[in-house]
Amino acid sequence: MAEQDARRAPLKLVACDAARDTAGRVAEILDAPLVGSREVWFACGEGKFILQENVRGDDLYIFQSPIYKGGDSDRSVYDRFVMLLHAVEAAALSDAEYITAVVPYYPGARQDKQKGRTREGISAGLFARCLQEAGATRVVCVDIHNLAVAGMFDPYRCRLENVFLTHRFAKWLRRRGLCGDIVASPDLGGMERARDYAAELSVGIVGLSKERDYTTENTVLRSTLIGDVAGKDVLLVDDMVDTGGSVVAAVDELRRAGAGNVTVACTHPIMSDPAWQRLSELHDRAHAAGWRFRMVGTSAIRHPDTPHWYLEYPIEPLLADVIDHINRRGSVTGVQQGDDPE
Image (cartoon, rainbow, N blue to C red; front, side, top):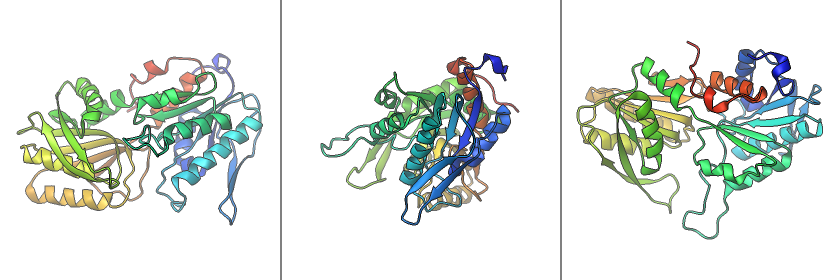
């Protein structure tokens, strides 16, 4: 890491409770201090965030995991987002020089426009305004659902730093023999992402046209394949898996078209009910039919006690590199093209 005198301000990390594991691992990689802090939740459901050390003049990185499958899983995405706002404001009132919210999964990113309805909010923009009003000067996220969310921030007050996983994640998949013979996108909106992975892996690409029922949440009516997968192992890439319906529909369509083994790779394994049940049943069907199903998610969202067919890719080394380069005014674009430590 860079020498201290090259840095824009002393580097320190802060963790909301749901992100303590991630923040701790990044702090260890950076050999940076993790500031003492405490969340307080009152009986009525209100909360506050307390910094227990001096952060005046520091370059502060506040970690939060809006979706968390650990001990406080009774807290909602909105509870954790508001706690992040409390933490950001506490840092601003404590006179930190720079305040960066590190939120690998940006909440509300799928709610980035009105989908044909005239009377619904645009949560991605609402959350952006909340973060910058609380005092954040930068927000770091990973593989955000729509890059247009960056335009919802006022660049003179707060900037969105989207971290792309493609290069490092693709190399990790190749080392483990999970890259397949061809890359597939589960929908037409993800074709650009699939093209990036295909380019990194030097393989072909196919796509699926996904027809949704927008009158019912998380409902996919059918998927239609565009391309040829007969006799090929497939890497199906997506930015998130929520209830698993899209994944199951996509894999079934690939198999009907003659695909061999299928690996699903996603940045944000949200895995809301009934995702684990659906994917476990898919794995069991694959095993019975003599082909292999695997799923790879990243540590952007951690899950305890995962089944043997689920693998986790750690994003902490990349986050550490990004934070280090921001702190010493280096190139974030360049660091995303680097390599993870073996």
